[in-house]
Amino acid sequence: MYQYRTLENTSYEQLAECFCLAFSDYAFPMKLSPQQLRGILEQSGVDLTLSYGAFTEDRLVGFIFNSSSLYNGQKAVFDVGTAVIPEHRGKGVFHQMFQVMERQLIQNQVETYYLEVSNNNSDYLQKARKYGHFTGYKN
Image (cartoon, rainbow, N blue to C red):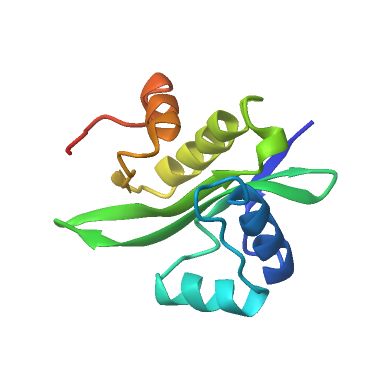
């Protein structure tokens, strides 16, 4: 059973552990300390009150890191990074986490959500399109 909630009360140790595990099977696995991840998230303008996580037994197993600003005159949120650790993929974690986040962003009157996806990440593009999370695409 998964619980979905914002990340503002999640330690950087938990965030870094999940981040490293989530990217452990990528072409270039990322290994960051909690301090390094904190620096990157702060530099990217990530707002943990607008970022969401998937938890099982209080263990973070997936995340969506978001930043926000006014963009083209609209209140906008930008996906800075999203991942789910390998053993929890294919279980609907991303979809459910995104739905919870989407409802909250709508309640907070966010008008636009931006997601940048590498052409190399076809699995993520496929999921985003399948669930209607992705309405525009440019190469």
